[in-house]
Figure 1 (cartoon, rainbow, N blue to C red):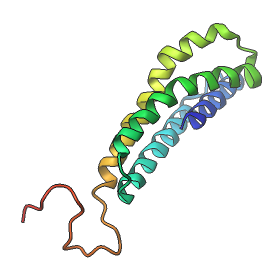
Figure 2 (figure 1 turned 30 degrees about the vertical axis):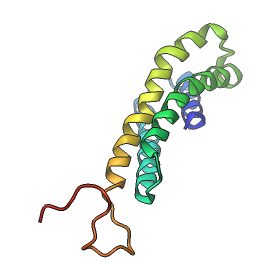
Figure 3 (figure 1 turned 180 degrees about the vertical axis):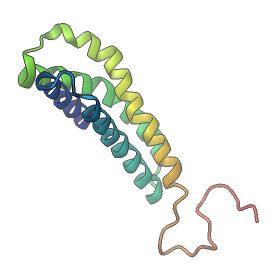
Length: 135
Protein backbone atom coordinates (compact mmCIF):
# COMPACT_ATOMS: atom_id res chain seq x y z
CA UNK A 1 0.00 0.00 0.00
CA UNK A 2 2.89 2.36 0.73
CA UNK A 3 4.29 1.92 -2.76
CA UNK A 4 0.87 2.56 -4.31
CA UNK A 5 0.36 5.71 -2.23
CA UNK A 6 3.87 7.04 -2.88
CA UNK A 7 3.52 6.46 -6.60
CA UNK A 8 0.06 8.04 -6.73
CA UNK A 9 1.12 11.21 -4.95
CA UNK A 10 4.23 11.50 -7.12
CA UNK A 11 2.14 11.15 -10.29
CA UNK A 12 -0.23 13.82 -8.96
CA UNK A 13 2.71 16.16 -8.35
CA UNK A 14 4.01 15.54 -11.87
CA UNK A 15 0.55 16.20 -13.32
CA UNK A 16 0.28 19.41 -11.31
CA UNK A 17 3.47 20.72 -12.91
CA UNK A 18 1.96 20.49 -16.38
CA UNK A 19 -1.65 21.34 -15.44
CA UNK A 20 -1.63 23.57 -12.36
CA UNK A 21 -5.25 24.72 -12.67
CA UNK A 22 -6.88 21.51 -13.91
CA UNK A 23 -6.16 18.88 -11.30
CA UNK A 24 -9.51 18.34 -9.55
CA UNK A 25 -10.66 15.37 -11.63
CA UNK A 26 -7.27 13.64 -11.56
CA UNK A 27 -7.02 14.11 -7.77
CA UNK A 28 -10.51 12.69 -7.27
CA UNK A 29 -9.77 9.70 -9.50
CA UNK A 30 -6.49 9.03 -7.71
CA UNK A 31 -8.18 9.12 -4.30
CA UNK A 32 -10.88 6.80 -5.61
CA UNK A 33 -8.26 4.30 -6.79
CA UNK A 34 -6.43 4.42 -3.43
CA UNK A 35 -9.65 4.02 -1.44
CA UNK A 36 -10.86 1.25 -3.75
CA UNK A 37 -7.60 -0.66 -3.47
CA UNK A 38 -7.62 -0.63 0.34
CA UNK A 39 -11.36 -1.38 0.59
CA UNK A 40 -11.21 -4.17 -1.97
CA UNK A 41 -8.16 -5.80 -0.45
CA UNK A 42 -9.69 -5.56 3.03
CA UNK A 43 -12.94 -7.09 1.77
CA UNK A 44 -11.06 -10.00 0.20
CA UNK A 45 -9.15 -10.59 3.44
CA UNK A 46 -12.39 -10.69 5.43
CA UNK A 47 -14.15 -12.83 2.85
CA UNK A 48 -11.32 -15.37 2.97
CA UNK A 49 -11.37 -15.33 6.78
CA UNK A 50 -7.74 -14.35 7.25
CA UNK A 51 -6.72 -14.53 10.92
CA UNK A 52 -5.90 -11.25 12.71
CA UNK A 53 -6.89 -9.23 9.65
CA UNK A 54 -7.85 -6.14 11.66
CA UNK A 55 -4.49 -6.04 13.42
CA UNK A 56 -2.67 -6.62 10.14
CA UNK A 57 -4.44 -3.71 8.46
CA UNK A 58 -3.75 -1.45 11.43
CA UNK A 59 -0.05 -2.26 11.23
CA UNK A 60 -0.14 -1.85 7.45
CA UNK A 61 -1.62 1.63 7.84
CA UNK A 62 1.02 2.59 10.40
CA UNK A 63 3.78 1.46 8.06
CA UNK A 64 2.21 2.82 4.86
CA UNK A 65 1.99 6.37 6.20
CA UNK A 66 5.66 7.20 6.77
CA UNK A 67 6.98 4.92 4.02
CA UNK A 68 4.70 6.52 1.42
CA UNK A 69 5.85 9.94 2.62
CA UNK A 70 9.49 9.00 2.10
CA UNK A 71 8.71 7.46 -1.28
CA UNK A 72 6.85 10.63 -2.26
CA UNK A 73 9.84 12.84 -1.44
CA UNK A 74 12.20 10.50 -3.30
CA UNK A 75 9.86 10.25 -6.30
CA UNK A 76 9.32 13.98 -6.40
CA UNK A 77 13.07 14.62 -6.20
CA UNK A 78 13.81 12.20 -9.02
CA UNK A 79 10.85 12.70 -11.38
CA UNK A 80 9.34 16.13 -10.72
CA UNK A 81 11.37 19.04 -9.38
CA UNK A 82 14.49 17.98 -7.46
CA UNK A 83 12.77 18.41 -4.10
CA UNK A 84 15.22 18.37 -1.21
CA UNK A 85 15.20 16.86 2.26
CA UNK A 86 13.37 19.93 3.56
CA UNK A 87 10.11 18.38 2.29
CA UNK A 88 10.65 15.27 4.39
CA UNK A 89 9.26 16.85 7.58
CA UNK A 90 5.88 17.63 6.06
CA UNK A 91 5.72 14.28 4.32
CA UNK A 92 6.41 12.42 7.57
CA UNK A 93 3.82 14.32 9.60
CA UNK A 94 0.71 15.49 7.76
CA UNK A 95 1.25 13.44 4.64
CA UNK A 96 1.94 10.27 6.60
CA UNK A 97 -1.13 10.75 8.78
CA UNK A 98 -3.33 11.28 5.73
CA UNK A 99 -1.91 8.21 3.99
CA UNK A 100 -2.35 6.08 7.10
CA UNK A 101 -5.99 7.11 7.39
CA UNK A 102 -6.46 6.58 3.67
CA UNK A 103 -5.42 2.97 4.23
CA UNK A 104 -7.05 2.31 7.61
CA UNK A 105 -10.57 3.66 7.07
CA UNK A 106 -11.31 2.06 3.66
CA UNK A 107 -9.69 -1.20 4.78
CA UNK A 108 -11.89 -1.22 7.88
CA UNK A 109 -14.94 -0.66 5.71
CA UNK A 110 -13.76 -3.44 3.40
CA UNK A 111 -13.29 -5.77 6.37
CA UNK A 112 -16.82 -4.99 7.52
CA UNK A 113 -18.39 -5.57 4.10
CA UNK A 114 -16.25 -8.56 3.20
CA UNK A 115 -17.16 -10.33 6.43
CA UNK A 116 -20.82 -10.21 5.44
CA UNK A 117 -20.38 -11.70 1.98
CA UNK A 118 -21.16 -15.41 1.91
CA UNK A 119 -19.03 -17.75 -0.14
CA UNK A 120 -20.56 -19.40 -3.20
CA UNK A 121 -20.09 -22.93 -1.86
CA UNK A 122 -21.72 -22.06 1.48
CA UNK A 123 -25.49 -22.67 1.66
CA UNK A 124 -27.61 -19.60 2.32
CA UNK A 125 -28.99 -21.17 5.51
CA UNK A 126 -25.52 -21.20 7.09
CA UNK A 127 -24.40 -17.83 8.36
CA UNK A 128 -20.71 -16.91 8.51
CA UNK A 129 -19.11 -16.85 11.94
CA UNK A 130 -20.11 -13.73 13.78
CA UNK A 131 -23.46 -12.55 15.06
CA UNK A 132 -26.28 -15.08 15.42
CA UNK A 133 -29.19 -14.67 13.05
CA UNK A 134 -32.29 -12.84 14.21
CA UNK A 135 -34.96 -15.06 12.61
